[in-house]
Amino acid sequence: MNRTTAVALASAAVLAPTLALAPTAVAGGMPKGDSVHLQAHLKPVPFSKVKGSGTAMVTLKGNHATVKVKANGLLREAPHAQHFHIAAKGQCPPASAARTVNGRKSIFTTDGAPFYGPIGTSLTTTGDTSPDSGLAIDRFPVGSTIDYHRTIKVSDAAAKSLREGTAVVVVHGIDVNGNGKYDDVLGPSDLDKSLPAEATNPALCGPLMMSAKGPVKGGLGGSQDADAMGTVATTAGVGLLAAAAGALYLRRRRSA
Figure 1 (cartoon, one colour):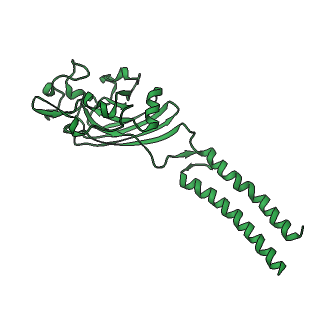
Figure 2 (cartoon, rainbow, N blue to C red; figure 1 turned 180 degrees about the horizontal axis):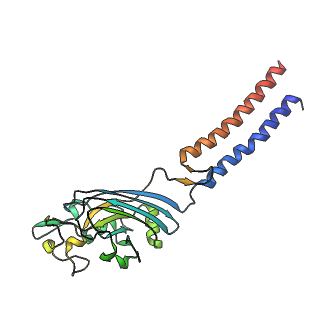
Figure 3 (cartoon, rainbow, N blue to C red; figure 1 turned 180 degrees about the vertical axis):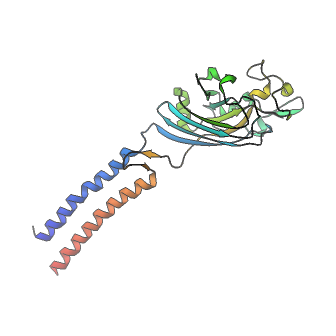
């Protein structure tokens, strides 16, 4: 073996582990298979008379979800139930889902069920988050704006729906006649006859979709996204190819 060949092989031996290890190091910083990042844009439900909007962001790892909901344009000084609805079409109800009550069109909670499904998780401010707390009006955000942030444990069914893209965030509570309170203008709630329909009808809705890029902790340090990881792996590969090309060039030059 001549000196040129030995140098080329030595260079490849030094750089090959870099190429082999770079993807591994990056992969070590990626979320585990059960970690997902989701987001939803909350828009007014047809005929709700709500003029606000909102966003929801969810990071799910196993059965633990960190949930952030921000919304505005809701009824002032009133509680607003909010949930993950699951296991249906993963959609918000269209205008055609509305019924007419007392001469007014409105979408009741059960009217939206074929589209967004039943309650999977109650986004309460404290305590239980199961469907049993779906109407725990003393433990939901109150007022025209919502700024909600909580890490909770969700059921297997809710986690499955979140991963499959069939989970929907729904914020409830409307004021269709604009009198500043929940009243019986639409009759009783279809969920609890002791409550007015305005208190439980859906106001804002948004399907939870996978984020284009989720933050990745660890690995190479700091936050990395898929583009950054691809750049690292590509850089390592380019380094090895450049070294091999350089060795080949030297070999040919000395043989000339």
